[in-house]
Length: 313
Ligand SMILES: [Zn+2]
Image: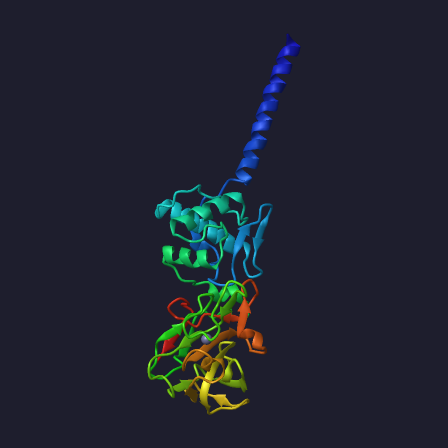
């Protein structure tokens, strides 16, 4: 009898012990179904992607775990607030089967190619749906610039404000090389163009030193200026006339040349300024064009989408 009591007591204790362990481990790995995507790094419309390849998560070299969490939390937000019918996700930064399934549901809802991969097109659509921009783009991309939140620049073309070619994978009508899915090239700047823009003054966007002034078949006459105060470089392509040379120091608003169509701008399209911004000191032509998945020092000069950039006329 006594043995039986001891036995049942120890079984009870064992059961309690098992439950405590379960409860502890359950607490430690509790699922995180947050919809607050704002707490994570926002992926870029170009270069960032993540997907499940059947056995593990695949991320581009520029996509970190916090950006995958953004994707998952944003999907949860859509389930909670945008009528997306799918399974809510554990926001763990690991893109698995469940995230693929919910991503696919999102893509179907918005008529995107439903491949379950959270790539540039899906990121862009998600931002449209969330109606967000990328407030983290500066700090997420470079440690050098992490303290700077706003670049106050002069708009680079006098009297012309139309952006005819978008930054990123979308490219645009005046981008000299049409984008396609084979080479996955990305437009690393914006094109500024409008009727009557030929010959308009091109202005330095901030104080700086002319790092390069040269001609290539693609860029035509181009100028790259390094802006030490911000630790960024600006690129101006296809100029007709050029009024500065390597080594010159220029002030913001200084007229550095005129808008033209030299280089590849004359191949198929028309007069425009290709204008790019890059973190740090430009040292390589690689800053011009890069491929999906490669890291880049370029960032969007389009103030409509990149709130880090503010222009005065
Ligand atoms: Zn361009």
